[in-house]
Image (cartoon, rainbow, N blue to C red; front, side):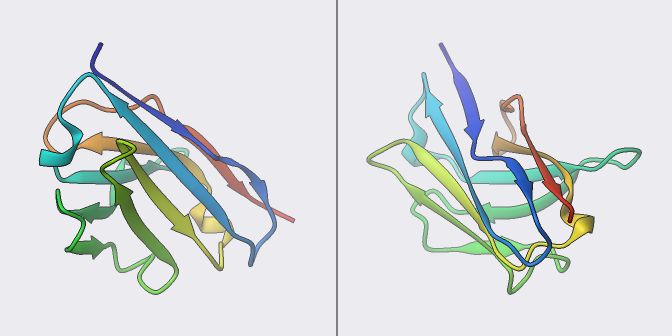
Length: 113
């Protein structure tokens, strides 16, 4: 079964950190670039970060540059999003995506004191 399953979301205080994981199965993970998106209440889904298939190239939305870091472990079929210096405006459901393909179901991140 082709699927992506996110984990690692939760409630964190402003300035805190979280690490999201996305486990892939059912396809050849190592040949696909991967994306993290997020969708806040009342807003459109936005691209947060992208990583190349080999993990050597990354891109970030301006709003998260310098705070978030995307990485992957092709041996574990997993992509990660390390989120530091979190702000209330980072509150959203975070989704991973096989670039141009399937989506995970998302994990909620809430940044609040």
